[in-house]
Amino acid sequence: MTSHEAAPGDPRQLPGGAPARAAARVTSRDVARAAGVSQAAVSLVLGDKWRGRVSPGKAEVVRTVARELGYRPNLAARSLRTGRTRTALLVVPALTTEFFARVYTGAARLAADHDFGVVLYPSPEGTGVAPSPFDSASAALDGVIASSMAADALAALRGAGLPLVMLDSDPDDPTAAAAVNLDIADGARQLATHLTGLGHRRITHLAADVESWTFAVRARALADVLADVPGAVLRRQPSALGVDAGRRAAHAALTAPGPRPTALLCDDDIIAAGACKAARRLGLRIPQDVSVTGFDDLALAVAVEPELTTVRLPAEEFGEAGMRALMAVLDGAPVEAATLPVALVPRGSTAPPPDAGHNAARPGG
Image 1: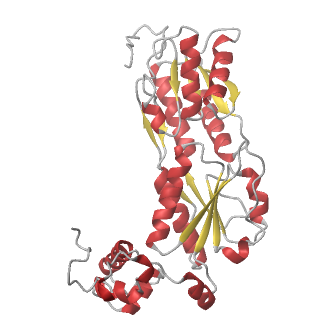
Image 2: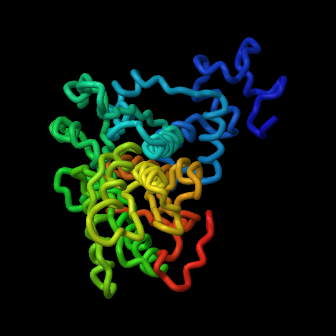
Image 3: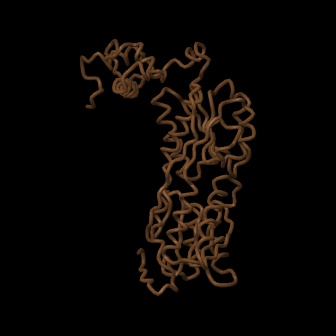
C-alpha cells in the first residue's frame, strides 16, 4: 500500500464506507483531509496559485493525494466563476510516430498536476478533411499548443484569438505568444560531425519533403558543417515521411550517376529504416559499405539491425515545456523562448567509409 492509499478507518475513506477512489464523490475537502492541509491550500495548489503561499513539499503531497483519490473539479462551476476552462488544445501533424504521442504524454502529465485538461487534435493525414475544432475554440479552450508541422491547422488556429505556444517553430514568429524548441540545429551538427569524424566525405541527405521550419534548420546546419570540411560533398535527396518513401529515396541516391555516397543522413528514423532496406536490396552491407543515420531515437531505431545511430529528442520533456509555457502565458508571466538540448546516440549503423584505410567495420560494429 502506498503512503497515500486509504486504509480501513482512514479519514480518506469517504462517507458511507465508499472507497476513496470513487472519483465522482471526491471533493476538495476530502483531498484536504487526506493531505493534512486546509481546503484553502488545496484550492491554491490545484489552481496553481500556491507559490509563496504553500510550501513545495505540501503542494506535491496535495497533487499526489488528488491523483490517488481520483479528484476531479467541477469544471463547469469553476469556468463560470473564473472565466477559464483550464483546457488546452494540442495540435500535432498526425499520430503516425511515437514522437508526438510522447509529446502529448508529457503535456498531459504536467497539465494534470496543475488541474488542466489537454485535448489532442491530430491533423488528418490520408483520411480526408476532419471537422475543424476552431470555430468554437475560443469558448471551449484557454489556449493552444501547436507543432509547426501541423501546417494545415495553423491558419484556422491563428484566427481563433487564443494564446498560442508554438513547438519546433521559428522563435521570431509574431503570431505566437511563446515558442519552445528542441536544439535541432545542434542535433544535425552532431550527426554531420560524427560522420565526417569517421572519414565520410560523400554524404547524401535524405531530406524530409515537408515545408517546415524544423527541416529547414537541419538542412542549413548540415550545409554549414560540411562547407568547412575539405573534400566533402553533400547531396540532397527529398523523401516523404515513410518507410517506403525512404527506401525509394535511398535507392535513387545509391544508384545515381557518379561516386556512390558512403553515408545516408536521414531526417528521421522512419526514413532511415527505409534507407536500410534499400541498401540491403542493392546488396550493400551496413555499415561496411554505407553508413545510415536517423533522427528522433524512436523505438524503431533499436528494432532494425544494425541499430541506428540517431539523435535522441526529449519528447516528453518537450511536451511538458510547451504546457508550462502556455500556463505562464495564461498567468500573464514573462516567457522566454526555451530550447531543449538533444543528444547524439552512436550505434552500429555507422562506421568509417569502405575506402578508408583504417576501416575495420564488422556487422553491428
